[in-house]
Length: 400
Image (cartoon, rainbow, N blue to C red):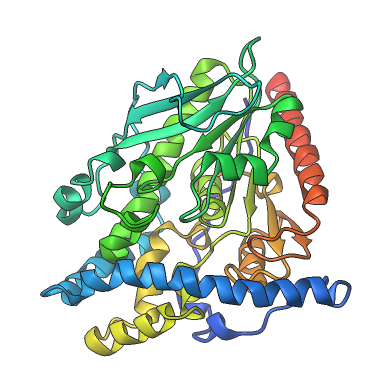
């Protein structure tokens, strides 16, 4: 398979310095605002109310870590560690390729979701990931359930097909919800195998004591969030290896919100992908949650107590931001989808990612983060985009 690799581009200065400090509260707008004002502004109001609930959950997970003795000083030192790596912008030093891992297929449990009339199994493997920061090794690996990576895999009986990896957002890791919401069975019926990946600390990877799916991603502070995203990338690459070894002719990825964020990062590290379709992607986590409550107040509290400002956190979390790197995947193979009324991951963040990769494609729908008005249109566009780029990869390989 031939693949056009873009030369590494080093930005000077880096994006976390050039992005305005008040970016989180700047106004939003898309070309759909005037065409569908009721749909856009009505759904935006809904998002503002719902994101407060998520903000309470995330703040409740983060706060105890900082209240512990020395927690804030420890977090400041760790953020400096990650910031140094982000500033080097050496992709392979940050996203270390995983070793060969044995992925096992298991029968889906009796009380677990299973798609109707579609052959499906649960894939599992012991995640080979170890924290990039050695100070976190013991604490991070103490989450035993998180060490078993898992996914639900729908395959065609006649052998491997082009495969869509779909990745859920924060909290909402249910296979049933994501399968129905994104009409994944229609992609299966149109010839694609489907792999629904469970992100670290979500679903069956959450500890029994955790109050919600994804809690562990935040419970160890921002440094644990960093390692969780690095583990998500590592685990996704294991699944990609598995699919190609099994005989999948093409593999692509899509996801919503945090899953859109992971999809974007995969474009940074994986030139083997045929396509990448981030949907309402998170782009800069700190700037995103600063406009929420009570997370915005928590950012102010951290800054007051430690001097660790939102800009310092932006720099420390930049280690896994797609804005920090040029993609190994040709941006022409990336289609970014955004909601004009989205106030979880507002349009200005979607535009920021598109501006970073201007050759990527951008599509707006007149809805918010969870109410995707006009979804049937973008699902059709997704199908066409996937088909076209799978065919392009085949053509490139044939001419190689």
